[in-house]
Structures are given as C-alpha cells and as structure tokens.
Length: 391
Image (cartoon, rainbow, N blue to C red):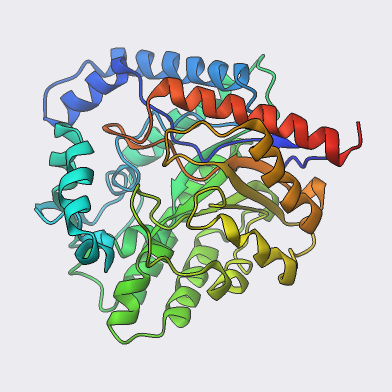
C-alpha cells in the first residue's frame, strides 16, 4: 500500500454516484425486466473507465470503480452467495436503533422520502439464510468482472493505486436473518469462510482490498439493549473478519469503519475510544475512519493517547459525504495536519468520511457537489503538504 512519503495522498471511501445509463440497467434488473447482458457489460466497462478518469482529473490518488458493478452495499454479496432467499420486510428502517424513536419524524419522513422508488422496493426486503453458505460461480465471475474493469481503467491514468470495496462479515450477518446455522457465531464464521474467496480474487489481481464495516458500530444499541457485552461482541466480529482475511497480506488491506453513516442526528453513536484497541487488531494496514462530520471530528484526539501501531496507515475522513457544504481547502488542510502531527505525515492519507452513494438509488450528494468536494480534498492535501514538508 502506498504511503504519503513525499506529499499527502488522497482517496475516498469508494462508492460514487451511478450514471444514468447504469441506473437504467439497475432499475430494469431490480424489476425483473430482461436485459441485454452483453450491452450492460460494455456500458459498465465504459462507465468505470470514465469514473476513474474523473477521479484522477479531480486529484484523487487512490481510486475505486465507484462500486458501479453493485446494485447495493451489502445486497450485492448476498446475490453471490448460496444459502439465502429474499422475503418481504416493510420495516426497512430497523437499522437505526434508539435514534429512530427519538427522531421519528426525521427518519420516517425525511430519510424515507430520499430513497428512490426502485431502491426502496429493494430495501423493503429481508435476506434470510436458509442453507449452507458458499461462494457461487456467478459470484466469482462478477467479482472478476469488477476486478478486470478497474484494472483496465487505471492503465495510462496518473493514479497511485486502486481499490475495490467489499462488505465485512459482520455487516452481512447482523443485517440479515438466519434460520439455518445453530448460532449467530456459526453463521458469522460461515460468511467469513466464504468471503475469503472474494477477498482473495481482489488481492490476487494486484488491487487493494477495502473491507466496509458499517454495522459493527451501528448495532451498538441493539447489542447493549439485549444485555450482551458490546466489546465481547466486537471481539467476535473482529475474529471473524480476521478469519476472512486469512492468507492475505496486511499491506493489501484497508478497513473502513463508519457509524452507519446515513444522514441523521447520530446521537447514540458509540465513541471511537470504546473500541479503537479492538479495531487495531484487524489484519489491515489502512484504517479509514469518519473524522469530518460534527459527531466525530473531535475524535482526532483519540490518537493523542492511542499510538498508531508501527506500519499502520490512518485514512481519516477530511470531507463529509453527509452535508452539501463544500469544505474549504484550508479546513481540509487543518484536519490533515492535526492527524499528521500525531501519527506522522507518512502515515496519513486524506479521504472522505463515507461513500457518496449507498447504492444505485441512494445518492447522498449530487454529482457536481461530489466533484467539488474531491477538488477541495486535493487542494487541502496540497496545502497540508506545503506545511508538513515546509515547502
């Protein structure tokens, strides 16, 4: 994994706004309409190439495919695994925890209204594990397609590296129900066993692997309210993720943690200090953690007392996906310098808090705002470079 050896590098969390051409295909496939898959494959390849060019043009050093090959954040994976079936589940806001009751008007009205019709129908479903989990031939083909599209797109582009985001076992196991395995732990480790194959396909291709884990923190309320020990629950999920990462070099892995990262009050988010020691046991070199939004920006001070282990890289959010305000480059630079002064400039890569689209139909910001934010990230990184290298 590249480090900021002579300047502050930039990246983002991965998901970008899907172009209309791909949205049309996604909507058709979600509705069960027959699609010319060869034409879809060509469109996908061309759009991935285009979004990589756009990222490079806006100063992103470490790029992704925008997650263009996936319809949704976790649902993509379950379509590549055996053992699951889709069921109706109208309570698609159940992931919100205590905040749903405290801020019911916001969540029932504002958030629900922002979800497009096609994606809303997808979310109002429940994945249920009804049999043994394994990776499918179709899943392997889709994963290799995504790898090949991104690898082709970065050729002749002035980028440092490229990564593919994929979901962590925890963020599948607690989002979806289990009727087959004897315990939550057995279900979790069965997922981890199968996902190792997906992870290896990415790393074996030469790309970086990013593991996305929103639910680890998002489920804090439910775990505590059920009487379970939250830290022990986190330890179990970290162990499962490390099982999924077995045999994969740490320097090829980025771990992304957010607090669900939807746009909302987030008053019940678990503090980073409560779990940071457990997170650092994950077999990853890079740690992508929200640090720009007003609920978590203060947590840069965690690194005053918690030493970043030797060889690790911090990838803090320096721009927010959740607000339309475009951060001033000076603010971005200040955020970067704070982290660099604590963990070392070579150990910081500037990023966004989370993805700019949670799926094909859930856009967090308009595309022109996204590019303006990434411009501000690159400009802020250049300012920080001047200060940190005394140029």
